[in-house]
Length: 361
Image (cartoon, rainbow, N blue to C red):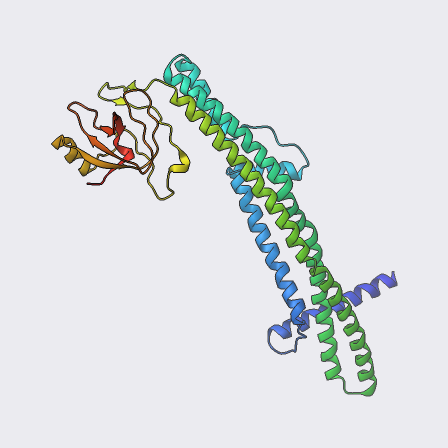
């Protein structure tokens, strides 16, 4: 019992001494032992790594699961060491709505069939996204979280011990300065030697531990490569799925009557994606605003030259296929749809959409 009381008193005295030293340092009334530049740099690097790792990890979670309520629910299940209930992701939910709507409108109808095909593609994209989430969690998020909850916690603990040893050292220096009698000075010098030794030892332990940050960065780099590879696989799958869907929709009849029977709509055209410049506008819908140049051309019934902006595959024999950057002759015929012109290339002629053209004279 006496031993516990003495230990408690000693701990309380140490805590009080550190508190006084810390307060006087903040008020500028006491000197502070500075750490060497290398150790300070390592401490800063560790704190910076922890800060940015947390931010990257959090934003990656937001990217993979945009719904905050779902993220919170998954976090709670993880802490309870229980498996979260299975649910449809956003793409899979959209897929289900499209397929259900298509079946209700009729798989034999053009719109119903298109909805079903789109739904099936969205379902495949949803499955690919699910694989992306699982792979990223294992190869990227988990290693980052292990650093925050493991290695960095150990570093923070040793850093705190170093701070306490430094406060003890500076408090011992202050007591030595205040000692007047020989006996008090001798005791203060002995105390200073002990605290200096403990501080040096803790500084070395902390330094060796913090130098492992470079290895941490190398490990996180490998994890980052895995994450990029998972994303690359996902986007490649999505691109292929959408290309397949585009081909399926391109096989539909070339025109469909609109609800008000005032105009006709063209089906989705097959666009060669690599030919589209990143700065070029995407083809507009069939009811887009016609530019003044095309309006004048239709009014005059004359011939003009036009540059083709994007590749275009003719949907039927009445249309003319186009290649990006080629120049063709264009003109309007009486009664033509406002979104189309007649195009000529040598002996070839056919309808072309004006949204794929740019008048050049």
